[in-house]
Image (cartoon, rainbow, N blue to C red):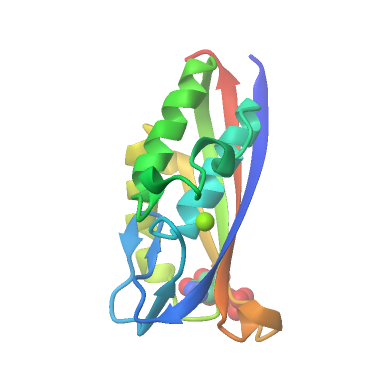
Length: 161
Ligand code: C5P
Ligand code: MG
């Protein structure tokens, strides 16, 4: 068996009145959300780049350029599904995904299982094969000031299915 690992990173700025979508889950009752060309789901975007990285398929901007009107307000869970098709077509299956969301507020732990379920369903793996973790930045820097969100993700693939 030949295993491959990829890493992904994404960040989005927060602005008042925007929707806050993370891992396909809309976080309710927050007076701000993420700004971006698509739905600005930083968790989905970091996972997409981790999967593309492991498969050696470039990055999210190569496949879904933000200069392309097709991807305006795109549902990032849809982009993740398309990414998984590309990964499968290149001869890999997804073994495991792990992510760390760095966000000062709100507390996101209560949404962990919903995000895992949405990501696992889209990727086509058991929910136990997707991990999502949360950290503040301890008040430091732009994340600490609540100006935006950062996400790091790792994906493991194996050849064949
Ligand atoms: O950043 P810190 O170490 O203080 O985070 C402690 C815990 O708080 C994390 O392990 C996570 O369970 C939770 N957390 C959260 N939502 C955040 C940040 C942290 O649920 N936005
Ligand atoms: Mg993004």
